[in-house]
Image (cartoon, rainbow, N blue to C red):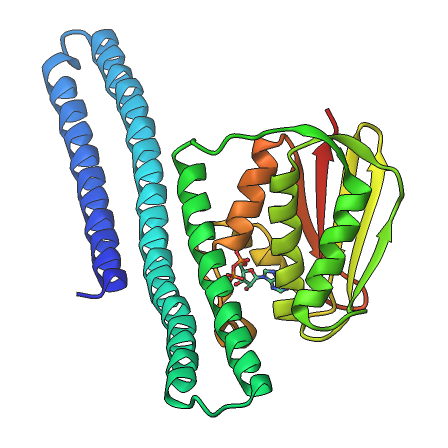
Length: 307
Ligand code: ADP
């Protein structure tokens, strides 16, 4: 059975059971009050009154506890259903993400072995293609492993004194080159910002945010800026893509979460990138927030302490 349908069925059963318990409860309270009135009203009206208030008092406490439990359980069920749905999406997309580069590598290798007469340019192109797809596979596997390490609490941070300005500029230049469009990334990096950070984590964060800016923003320019604010460093990545609707600005950081719109469906991804980014920033005692960019697109701001 479809997990969404099964989840909906569990919810309906849960609500029916809750309503049944509530009715039963009210009915028993009503019977108890009547019983007390019958037993004590004539002989001792004061005692009857006291007993009625006792039933009402204890009943109210029970009712509050019951409603709180129902609320917590209902929230847990909803979260579970959404996690199952996201995991299914993740499995679908990871299968696709694994298959596509594998098929491309296989095709390149087969072409190379079947056509020994290819000239060196053609061979070079095929080898480059195979190597790029191998990289894509490696990045995907690295991300899955990193997310697993984060989840199990095994990911450790290693802070070293780093020239963050130089590192930001170096990664941005390399990414522009990887994207294949020198000049697409506009940097505004304040020089000489240094501090105690984990350079490896910083690179993962910046690479993921630039990759997303390019993936969803197309060939539009990407702005990367770095400045110092008190004892923190502020890294900002802005794009001119479709932007992120306000109601999803928190959810995009959830594991496996992908927006369900045309742009996302047509782009490859697993919904792990921003989860990793947010968790790494959290491990480094930093914060991340996303705002709308002007005139359009998204702007991700990362704050990291320098000590
Ligand atoms: P992935 O890119 O693999 O889908 P991410 O965790 O990096 O996963 O991003 C989660 C979702 O957030 C994406 O699927 C996309 O819908 C949305 N998103 C992320 N970055 C951007 C961006 N710069 N512009 C528009 N949407 C974005």
